[in-house]
Length: 76
Picture 1 (tube, helix red, strand yellow):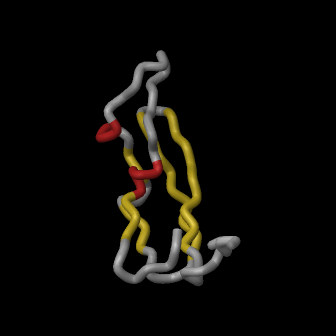
Picture 2 (cartoon, one colour; picture 1 turned 30 degrees about the horizontal axis):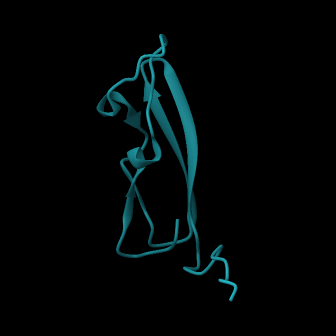
Picture 3 (cartoon, helix red, strand yellow; picture 1 turned 90 degrees about the vertical axis):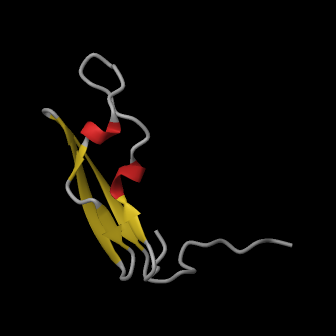
């Protein structure tokens, strides 16, 4: 994620879908996240844990230090 002092990333936006033990899609409102949002005002890494019942998953949201970091140059 690009460093931006005016934006905070809602962590549940990192989830496309979740399923229960039978493979049935569950309502994302029932999935809990270790934090609701990630502030993008300073470079850092945030490990987010998602849980649903006994199941859990992790992801890392990285805030880049420079708005141009990782942006490719357009070739003419």
